[in-house]
Length: 543
Image 1 (cartoon, helix red, strand yellow):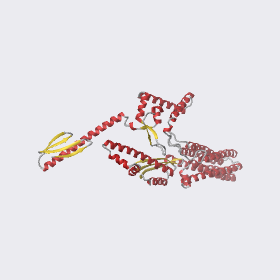
Image 2: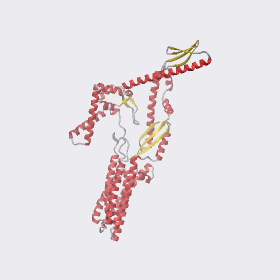
Image 3: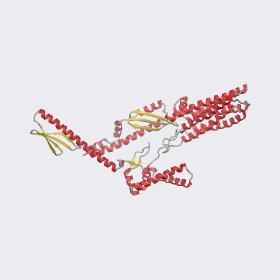
Image 4: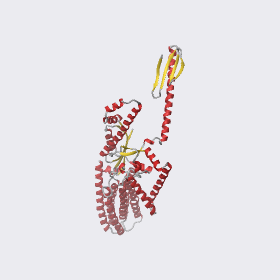
């Protein structure tokens, strides 16, 4: 009597147990191994279990040999194809820049169309990396020649970067410009096969709009106030007027720094700064706060202390009062401009006014607001102290006024430094905004859950949102199948005769499902940006 105990198609192992006259034979790949067996039920049961153990051991041995064989084949294949990169794609621009090929060299190579990495864009043309590598070796003759050309281009790039910093040698500058223009022309030849990252985002305006107009107006007014106060201080010798003169000078200098920050923050991103310069507003505001604290508050307090311990006789404050009155009107005008600009920003951000100011959502206008508020308070303090000093004919109230102005400037500077440093460290967006974005994502049919959410304020009203997303694979597959002819797919499956045909079928549809997954992520990100335009960078990572 014979019985099949094990059969494996992949290992092509067939084990047969033959019991004949008390002898047990094990047949494996044509080899017959005799195994003695005693008669009797118990001995047969023991022998059968021992025989099963031998079969399992042989099965494991065969599987291990097969895995080692496949691993060796994979290693050899990987070494011959540069670690398995032969299936990788490469864009025309990269092929030209990395392998120094011409457009005519790429014409005869295999190419295909792949989904664009940018939303709402047509597919891009790509080549197989192994074909481009082979073409580069054909063009350049050898790997050594290609490496020499790469080394040459690297040296030229270093020289170009140096000439951007040092323009002392005209010949070097002209050479660098020519290299740069040649690179531009080579890239423009294949612009139809690729596109740059879209830069159609708008920060909080440049110098001629929004915050920039407020800052430029403040520069003109504070610069004029500084000149008038300087004349008044030289005429009267008042300590309070000196503090106000320093205050206007500090405000003018700081607002020039703010103007530079606004101009820099409106620049588009580049390879050196892929997320742009939006944080420059916070940097400029932080420097401005430090300047107010050191120059404005420090010198005002110092001058006030000097006036207390070394008082000077006071003069006439007649013209000083007129200048302070004009300064009060002009400072109040810029203060109202700043308030209106911030109120508009708070309305757009759906935040209370003071919360908007406290968070420093628009740091440049925030600084103008606080500086002008301190200026109005300072003018009132200076005028009051000067009036008391003139009435009592004593320099002491005037020196105390300088101290009070220094304290006001110090408090304003401290708040500016605190709010902007918190923003530069990386501040989260309001929790309500995060919950709103999360709920919108979780309502999508393709998403089961959202985890590890981070929403970072990048400055200039821009937000970076990152989340781990649990995608519903069944819904994704169902969405793919809804677009297919299932009858035709079933017919393809029925016609399959071997594993290779099944593998090709699964690979084709598996790659299509992965492409669909990318398209679904793009769709979700686009919908999120439409509802929340402030979300500049949206990173959805799959669990």
